[in-house]
Every structure is written in structure tokens, then in C-alpha cells.
Length: 69
Image 1 (cartoon, rainbow, N blue to C red):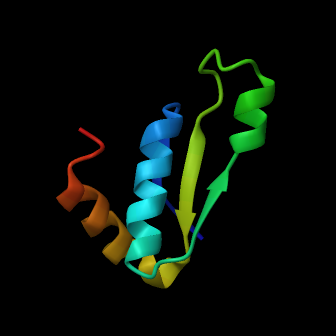
Image 2: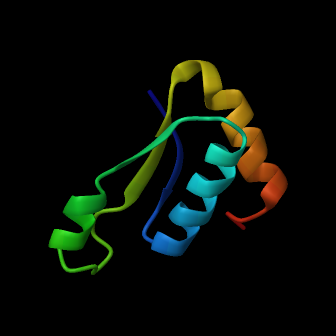
């Protein structure tokens, strides 16, 4: 699996996840529960992961959407 986005912003993760799912790319959020448990002080970021074969397409979708700017 490859990381395509890392952030503390749950809205950004949700939007990116939705865009990728819409494109038929299966996504997983790593560290979501850990980030919640640490009290949302920003110490642990959530990571959006895709399978290796989908990395380039996923990065392109995120870049084209300009949501990570």
C-alpha cells in the first residue's frame, strides 16, 4: 500500500476519500482511531492509503482537485 495523503484535517481526508472512491479506487484510512485517541492535538496524522497499482492515478486525482493546497 502507498500513502497518497497525510493530514490532521478530517474533512480533507473525507473529501479525498470520496473523490478516489468515485473514481473506483479502493482507499483505506490509517491511524484514524489513533488520531482520535490522542485528543486531536495534531500529534498523529491520518494517512490515506491505496494499493500500489492505484498510486499514480490517486495522486493525479488529488492534485487535479486542488484539495490539498
